[in-house]
Length: 214
Image 1 (cartoon, rainbow, N blue to C red):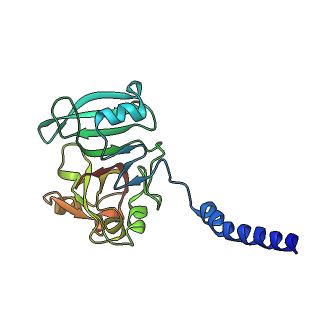
Image 2: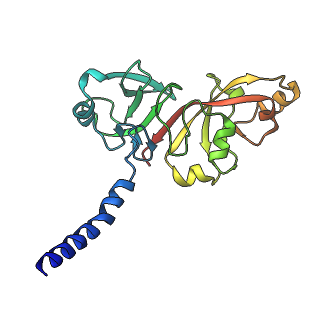
Image 3: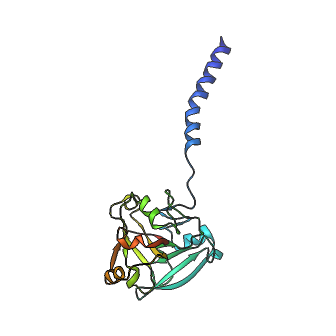
């Protein structure tokens, strides 16, 4: 009788443990290379320079400056000159750097991407697919000095809903006989939408993705 009671108790304990074990097994591990509104890969928008130093190591950090709209902005490159390179933009103009304003990646060999697969190197058609086929608004390639188009918005599509922090840049990777009249028509425009007929004759890809503090 006691033996039967003991076996029953053991069965109940094992049965009670199984759902918890199954739940733990089904929980997917966090992607260490994910692009989210918290950050990109190991770099989070909440990090200070001291936190980056502690988490990643001083030997993997390189400080510098860049010109942004005529202003000098201090940056830190994480994993400089590697496929995994990440650029951190600071609010402060001198040390200590405590406030990240933007995190960006620009290497199409890098591992970073959103859960849906959006990454540096994604084509415009792929971006539109991830955006539930809503158009993307961007600056005009043809009236900027660097030739890039900065993403201005996703017009209420899925990307905007899931990643309100997300921005980036496009570049033209191929042109197929763009009509001169079309160019003359759009050159004065400050903004373009991906639904414009121009995109029937040019191939465009993402050359930078970034997340910003809102």
